[in-house]
Length: 266
Ligand SMILES: *[C@@H]1O[C@H](CO)[C@@H](O)[C@H](O)[C@H]1NC(C)=O
Image (cartoon, rainbow, N blue to C red; front, top):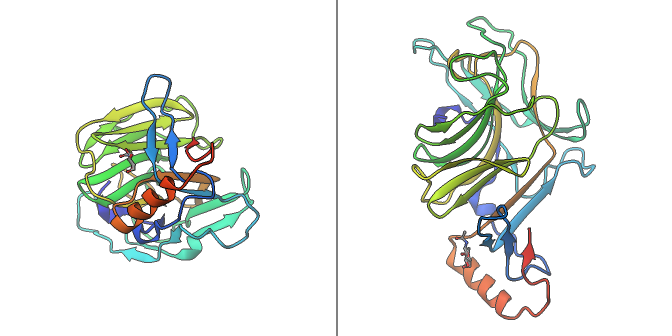
């Protein structure tokens, strides 16, 4: 996905990644990765439950976006202008269940409307060569697949687009990205689905969740003529810092830990 299309997103600023380990887990989180894959240790976690009954607050670490992207009507294919506001990211109990909604509002302007779609993404992002995506397109099937395809990508352009095997709009599913040394791996509902060893990010970045449409008939399609919602129930992030002071604090905290639960198994 080109960076131009990071819309209707909520993002986790790397500056906000300062949550200390909880009282237990002082020596980090050992994340299991399937029976024959080595667990990976991470020093920090941010776990967010969007079904916790808070009506507005989306938690300490996620932030709502507030920005716009100009249209490019003379491009081929043409792209519609988009403005994405904080009010498009909100807590709700409408639809499937309580949780977070990320909305693309119904389009009432003029211009191309194709396939009714939005693109929905869960991704790691720093720049156009440091990005790992899981994306779902809700519009009509075309050459890049329809609503039942999952798109697993290392940018630029390392893509795998298998059939999901389910209707992503019908229920919640567990979408997981492992970014580990030398590879990205994508898992859905605990099942390994895809792996890329080229184009693996090498710099720190942000985790973003978004839902957007610019009318591009070759990707998002749309825009939709009724409101389209991406629903999120919870997120769990396990990560290491690049900040020396944070890592020194972790080492010292772990050196003093004695409990049986000083390493938490995830
Ligand atoms: C994260 O940091 C810890 C502590 O320095 C280290 O042992 C671990 O290997 C790192 N994890 C990854 C995936 O690099």
